Amino acid sequence: MKIHLQQVLKQRGQGAQRYSLAIEHLLLEPGARVALVGPSGCGKSTLLDLLALVLAPDTAETFDLQPASTATDIAGLWRQGRQSQLAQLRSQHLGYVLQTGGLLGFLDVRSNIALPRQLLGMPDNGQVLRLAQALDVQEQLDKYPAQLSIGQRQRVSCARALAHGPRLLLADEPTAALDPLNAERVMQLLLNQAEATGATCIVATHDEALAQHAGLSILRMSCQRDADGGVSAHLERAA
Image 1 (cartoon, helix red, strand yellow):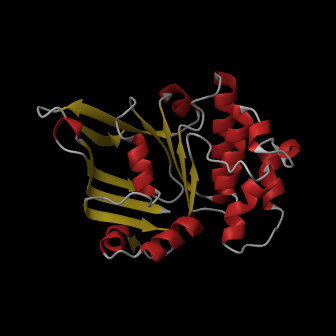
Image 2 (cartoon, rainbow, N blue to C red):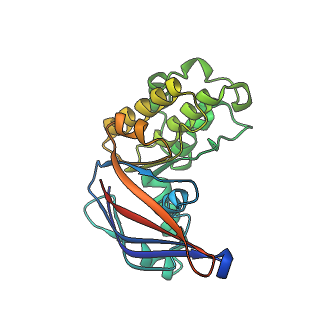
Image 3 (spheres, rainbow, N blue to C red):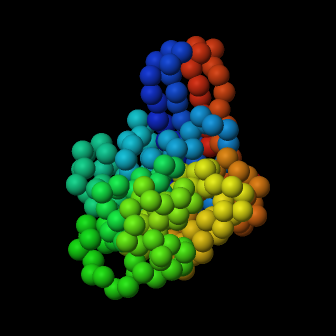
């Protein structure tokens, strides 16, 4: 999926409680693999939520996603209140690995992974089992999230995000709760599966060394305290 953002602004609160994120320019070609790095509170999750179409920009000169041959004007869809079309884009083309995993506790692992496909009416073509094997959770398919380790839950979350073949894979600190060995393993498994499907991949992480070792291009984010006490965050150019 191709991504093009120009002069995008998202702001919350006022005065000392104000937080704003400014994205002057972001252009990613299909299949790009990048890491958002920066200190906590600098806007990594906010940017992911914007790209995941769960958070509307306040202003945007350009906010285009191109899952196929034609770009979609995301800012225009938000302005027009086209929630159903935004939801369709999310379900068909996006996969999102949440920082907390986001698994449904009342579903077993197999059903959690299969959920995106079921919601789209996609048949069981063996993809759930293939992803479970690739991410080394095939022995956990009949268990529930509460019965899994943190690392296993994160791998299941990665499998679920990939199950329907998304064109854009977003991951918010997918390895933050893991020890270094498991962090590297989960990151590589996630990226290998994204590469196999040709998905554009954006990973938010505080671990720049891990991102570089995984071969990700670096997008830096920074923030500053302004005179009114609020915080302004910015996406910088790729390293």
